[in-house]
Length: 129
Image 1: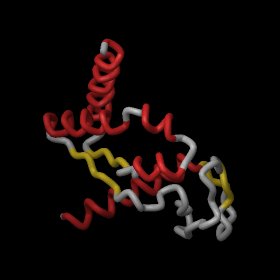
Image 2 (image 1 turned 135 degrees about the horizontal axis):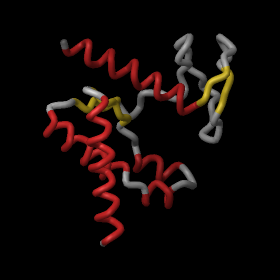
Image 3 (image 1 turned 30 degrees about the vertical axis):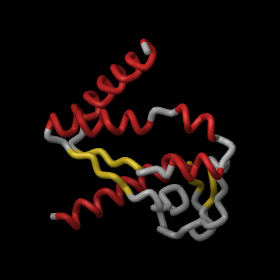
Image 4 (image 1 turned 90 degrees about the vertical axis):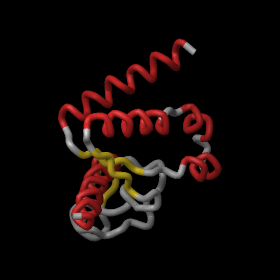
């Protein structure tokens, strides 16, 4: 119980720090149930506190008048090249770096996904305005 409480306190500190810097935060709506069933990472995913952190993030955003934009869970954030926009169907879950087969750029999977999420969030917000 003490560890859980301390983790949640850390989430509040982290969320407050994020919203001191940013007005809008974009997050992926990950399909954890499907990930648990389809991968051998079930124990790791089950222990993760992503959903708890998202709840804290949204609560802090609401209190501070900020915004959390959720990207649809089936958006292929890590499979789309952030330079040319083409999708790499051959990307495997363990590929951390990959070369775009169309524009031949070397991509870091996480950084590429972050850029695609940023663009998708901007596009979603722009449609609402």
